[in-house]
Image 1 (tube, one colour):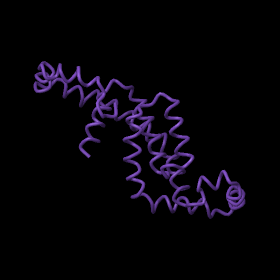
Image 2 (tube, one colour):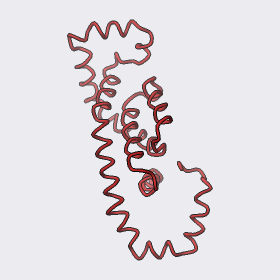
Image 3 (tube, rainbow, N blue to C red):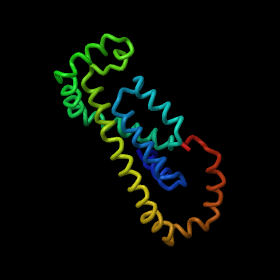
Image 4 (tube, helix red, strand yellow):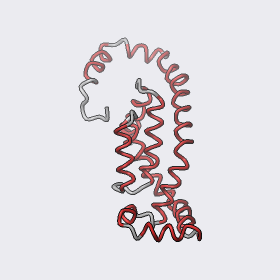
Length: 175
């Protein structure tokens, strides 16, 4: 848990563009609400690799939202059940279920379909909110921390110089 928080702070304090981090969190939301090796999750992972998003933020976000998904299961079930039992969509679901490709997606599971719909609906608001929060954090909190005497003394030390040289070696982190 402490390592995840440290990695999150490392991502927030990095030079990565806030939009790359927030977009990664948006994709992580959708991936985290779906089963791990579902075709949609693999497609999202491919999109993450093709677009310029922060991979560390995506991995951490997926782990976080996978945990949140268990808490949201009752809500996701209700959303998925409402969509699956909607009268006008009954023929669509029957046709899709009779196709092998769509059966693999497991959209007949109310939690899976509810997770996909909820993730898609929350994608844009989460990206915009995360982007604004990251920018505010960097402008206010990070700027204040860098101005403190403790941080200035730390960055002036030999230990910090050694840390900066060694940190580029990439030992076992999500760099």
